[in-house]
Amino acid sequence: MYSKSFLKLLNQKPSPHFVISTHKFCDGDGLGAGLALCYALKKKKQKAEFFTLEKIHPKYEFMDNQNILKVYNPEKMKLPKNSIYIFVDVNDTRLIEPLYSNIKKIQAPVYFIDHHPLVQKNLNDHFFIDITCSSTAELIYSLIKDLQVSLDQDICKNLFSSIVFDTNRFRHIKNSSKPFSIVAELMLQIKDVDYIYDRLFKTLTVNKLRFFSKLEKVEYYSNNRIAFLHLKESELKEYHTDSTQAYDMIDMIRDVEQIDSTILILEKEDGSFKLSLRSRSKDLIPLVKKFKGGGHSHSAGAYISSQSLDKVKKEILSYLK
View 1 (cartoon, rainbow, N blue to C red):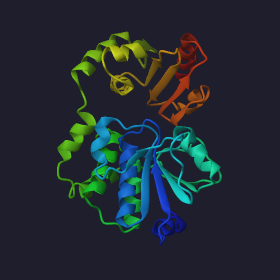
View 2: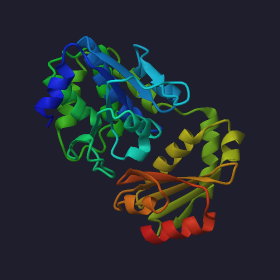
View 3: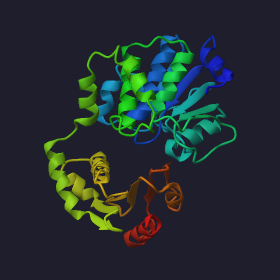
């Protein structure tokens, strides 16, 4: 899977400076896989840092036991020279802006590790992609094994978090036994699995339950196979919640038996829209590219500032139908 030159690079002495990162709106998969790799490199006495593109959601804070996460601020942070950048759970460079463009300015080497098909590819970058894996953690687990780093509690906790999050508690494993065999080994080092499950999935609050009353606004199309929800930023503030809860809501709608595709349009106070799409059967990339968006084949999004809601809705429904 990994080239000999990449493994040699990660083992090099004296150590290069490694910067690890993941996509915007980082989730359990990217954070867990990236932190596990960062901890493994540091355990080998290599120089490694982890940049996020925004502050992480509080439910993920338990994963950074060594307090190494830094929020990348292009206005205040100068990128380390002669560094090597590794992006995990990223298949589209638009998901890592402005960090990616600034790396290109200093002509630093960039490596991508992911389990999603590539959307954008720069010929000067390096890619390790395996779409048979159900999470990025599976790839990082293999890499850590190749690096001959012994698994400890911090590494295992993050690999475990990544796998259970991205497979949605083993519901989406691509018909593979590999996630189970890896987790069986990881659990030997983890003190409290229930705690991890509670932090990742037990996130309901009273405000969030009240916010779910907005489910009555869902519109259904194509014999209830498409669900559309339009929310306003003011509604989030009304219930003292944030956009993460809205995304949880749209994922919950997707669990309805008949529904194949879900659409969430979050209207900002400035009149722009944040579009989030999920689909079991449709490749969403051609659709979101029309709005200069990106993401994964069955989970994608875009920011829209210059089109009317009705026009955007009509184009999305036409594509999904």
